[in-house]
Length: 80
Image 1: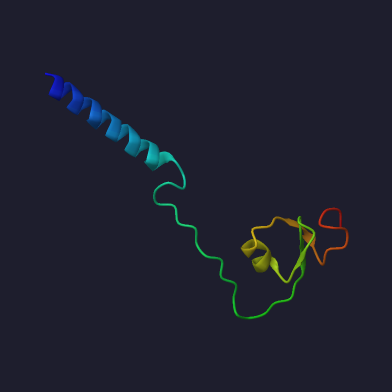
Image 2: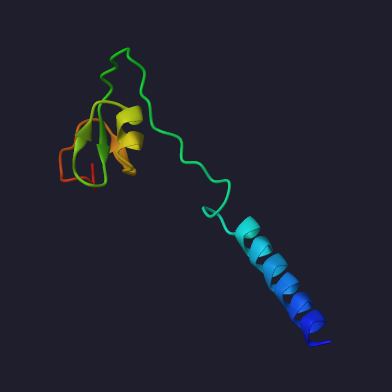
């Protein structure tokens, strides 16, 4: 009787854990694709919110930075 109770508890815990992993992003099945910019060099400068000028949008995305505005940085990221 106790063995059956423990078996059911373990099974329930296992199923609950698998469901949690299934519906939690980044735990199972989430692969972060590498950022690969094309070998063709494009210079279309953009300014990131970090105040740095990036050669193009691809390089900005690869750096994980949000776009502040298009064009080279003038005022430290925000406010161009």
